[in-house]
Image (cartoon, rainbow, N blue to C red):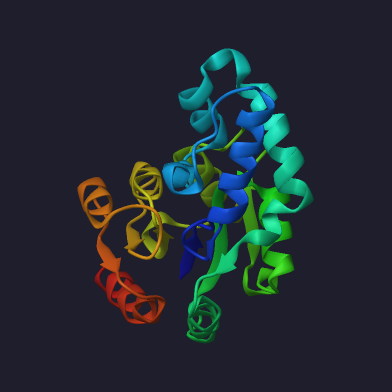
Length: 215
């Protein structure tokens, strides 16, 4: 049985690093830079989608360059590991599940984040977007993972905190467990069709077991 984990908002809280890098990009481009709390919505969606919303199409690629300049230097280290997640990942692995990362963050950065916090070795493979935006849509990414890893949708679950995780999984016939400790509201996850919404990481092993048994 296979578990696909989102990264930002699910395994780590990346808010300081991501919002700081977005604010840096906006300020460098001479645009107003909202406070961090006003930018929480940028965590989860693909970066190009975020900057398209903030700046319009013309400045998207330049904004991404600036964002990566800041995030790649120090921002990725500013994440916080969600309390209880390392222990939950270990429990799931001990129960025989194969763990994969499925993040719209470029895998180049996802690997750095997970290695920095000593979590990379929990996963069979760390999958993410390419730097050019390929696979930054969660549905495209999950399709790529299923094909590349040879995973059957019926034996796979997605675990994430935003509607992008739920909808991307559904597009590929994969059920999704929502997590309430991230950046998507309970309502967002339920409306998107999450099969269950966990309040804390410790709930995941039992919910995973129940959903896969039902499938």
